[in-house]
Length: 189
Image (cartoon, rainbow, N blue to C red):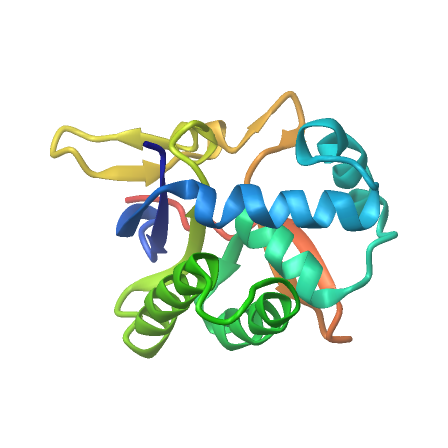
């Protein structure tokens, strides 16, 4: 069975596992299935490319849908933006999930973990949700040291100018903006 993992990124760019959730089908695939049917009128498998192009082109402006897409799509978020992320995902969940639904229970679990790192961040600056164990994107961003700790590496965050790791945040106009994570990285000592 696949799983999903919530990670935090510390001030030293260390990737730390916060929580692993069994059965990734209860969040990421359902989010994208719903969004692809809503916007491109196709299943996730057929409509993912078209949906991604719409997000990149800025034609999707619904904030809850964009935040759901961002969390499920492995965007990186600032810990400080957690209340905005949760508020928008609560709206998304209220539109899509039914009361007492297993999917709503999964969202409640994810929400609880997000709140816990927001209320007690320690040295955590960012979080990212790895939607499924069937995808290695988040893991490919890091390099493991001798002690088994994983750190984000600048050279792993982009390839030939294409940005893989982005921070999704709100700009000064309260609009969604995307920035390469490497712009936020501190040099490791």
